[in-house]
Image (tube, rainbow, N blue to C red; front, top):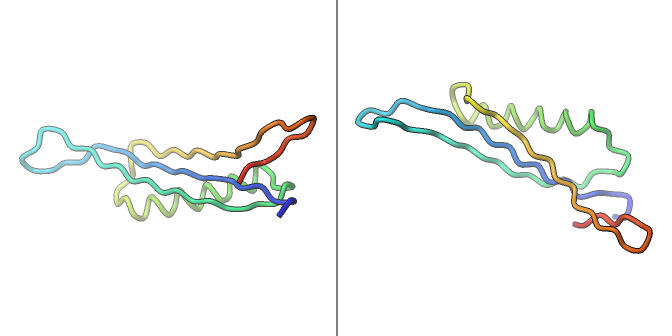
Length: 87
């Protein structure tokens, strides 16, 4: 597994909704996924994964959310003169 990097994806959808008997109401959905990807993975490959996650959360959310955001995390540390990926 040395040739792979653990990549964490977090996607959030957030928006106002109308609920009777309430002055203000908000709905939030979140999904989190982890994948091991080859070190050769490009930003375009990451964007394709994020696009699929956006589609997944939009289908669960219902109407179009006001905000739809993704966070991609790759954890690394410097060990001697090398970068070591955690996970």
